[in-house]
Length: 78
Image 1 (cartoon, rainbow, N blue to C red):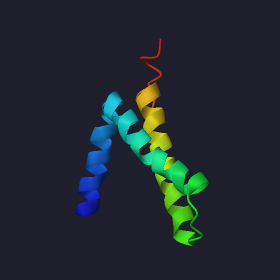
Image 2: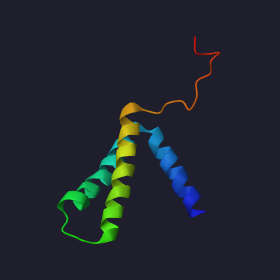
Image 3: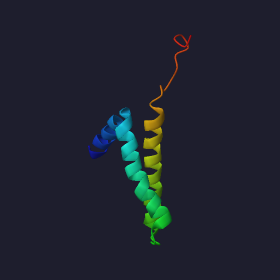
Image 4: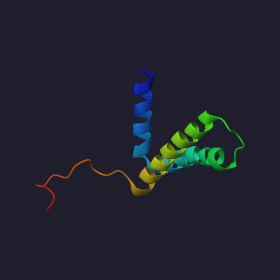
């Protein structure tokens, strides 16, 4: 149930460009700090930075480029 609600939240977030960019920056900034600035040697910090950075980059990219269709109908293409 919690995963379905989280998925729905993310899907609603990517529909709106400005909040997607803000959320992406909010995730990517700590990820960059964990990766490049933090002095931790913990294995989980590297994984957390990777997940946060990838999610943040995906949200930023979706906010900048907008949503694309999953398919293109050949009948309506022309």
